Length: 217
Image (tube, rainbow, N blue to C red; front, side):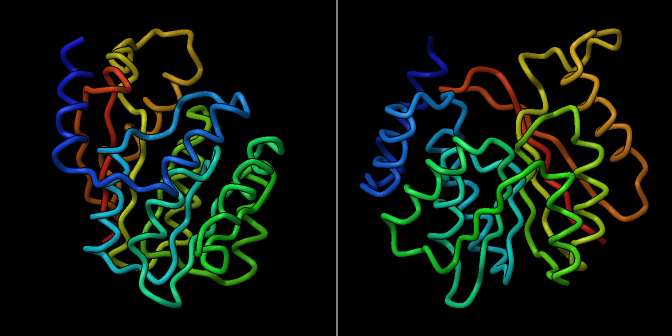
């Protein structure tokens, strides 16, 4: 498909081969993790947004094997930290092993457990975030947005992945709970007094999807 071919071209032109990132993708495949990581061009976008924002703390909801976590880490300044939440113990174990092979073990904390159970624990630690990436079970996107707002500093950037889902997002009567979760997420964003947001459709190696970019007022 031409989308994937264009992505290959862009990756060849703009993404420097990074052995640490490549190793994570290889390990994830060998561990039979689902191939749902962000693409290299999307990872580079997360990296650049992180560079622009210079966050002290990043919250990532949905770790998988740690590929996007490492993209974030490579853009952090010294002393900054990523807290990444993963419900699946197998995925969390793979992510830990992956991160242990990088220089960023002190900057990436993997918190295992369902995010709606670990977020309250994280809140008790009184950590506030400058960048939040929502990329987990879409059914709970509205709840994740509520938590993001509780934990966000003023001016924090919120990014949410997989919000177009091959165009199914416009299916008002969809019986897919993931679609309804994302639609409810958009309903919250529509007139929320604390957020300015937009959404971008994307095509490429990951097919047809998109992401939300928002800033907390």
